[in-house]
Image (cartoon, rainbow, N blue to C red; front, top):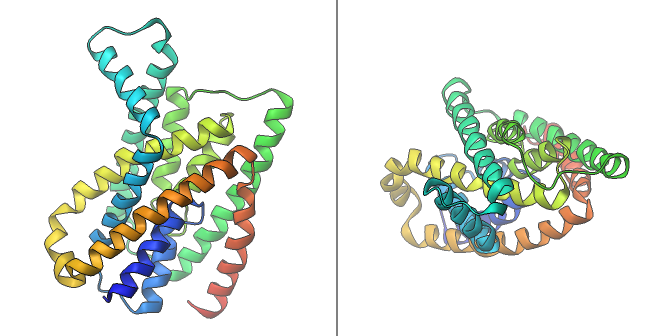
Length: 270
């Protein structure tokens, strides 16, 4: 892999990880175009780790607040206003467990999918974005939305995140859509989706860490470093941009990118 190829893949990962268009699907397509099928999965995980750092930077105050609530809860020194945040912490724990179980099962039972299924995943993501955006607008007008995530809803969103491990299904797209379908307000849906991704990405990195030596041989240190930095920088700006779009209820705009992309891919690039 050349430095330029890794730079482009890093930028693509950083943008597609947060914009609801599926980073894994776009990386699969890009690798096919660049003829990089021999690159190990741990390379993708490292790029995801770079975008994880962007999440930690953007939501650092929320993450620190939740850790504070968790430590006070464990030490039995909870404040009077910690109740809703304790539920949020429990929701993240349950959502992570559900995601982990589903992710492990899918990795063992579902083989590496050809590009045909990636394009189908794009179409599924597009449908989710359209219907969840319109459903959210209806809920806001009819009965209002919740500003916290209950443990049951957290498990439901964790299930969605587990499905989002499939190439072509956007992790951010499906988790934010699941949150909106669950009646959670847009700001909380976006925040919860990205915070929930932290343990999932760390878990995937731990599982693939044994192959770090393999990726250094297949890719090389310099291309790997360039791709990592590019993914972090692109991811930071993409995340800041997406947060604004979520609050405005504009996620379905990305569907009109995914649909023609999937159609063109199904016709010409299978």
